[in-house]
Image (cartoon, rainbow, N blue to C red; front, side):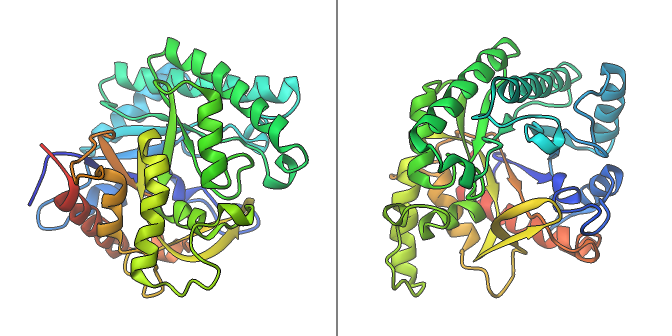
Length: 346
């Protein structure tokens, strides 16, 4: 059954993440937009894109005039902008959310710059919905030196960022991922959101690939592992584990990434090892993408939560030869359409 919502978006940052001097060259924004705009499945096309505010795509210091030109370039292809990723990490000019006073100041500054860009895109009529995506910009190893204190510092930094986001009418979504300290396990993620205590402004961004790793307890205490030690991918056990996971994090979820994972980790270029994204039809993928997406998009009664207005495909660190094939994006769009058909609304 076809539905109007959620809108279907494609991420632009796979053209940047894991690319660079130690890997393959980045894929420029125009190419990523064209591949997205040309994708089509039975007359259905992508509705929009989620973007990364970092060169060579879009500078965090872009002028309003240049941003208007980018907005026009996107809308001219029949696409809207949804969520935007703030470049909060030290290598991109930001700073650790649990670091020194100067580190935390740079973190908040970059979040506010991202909120300015996001709000201007709304003013230009290019962005009807979406959030500003953040994380702790801190390694698990650094966090583990003082877990309680570091989580408190991250929460304080998130609160300061939230105050600025509210002035722009924006919300912040913290992406749970095993490589970010204080956000590396489902239990620590819930604790951080509760300590931040800004439920109307700071929520969770769930990526199906990364949250699968939550159930396996990668980079976390044994107590944070949800599946049993001798887990052999029994479908019923996986479903029960994902139900427990989503029961804890779904109430916080304000942004959602459709993705596949083979239960391994991968790093590329400057990106730390994290949940490995797979193509939607990868035979090694552990998720039933369409069915398991419903664990996030519907409540326990099977009713759509309507907590997000769009969903986004995320698939980072694929080879450029794969990413520049139009078939790749047609296949991805096909899965996104199936997710909306199964769990969408009017």
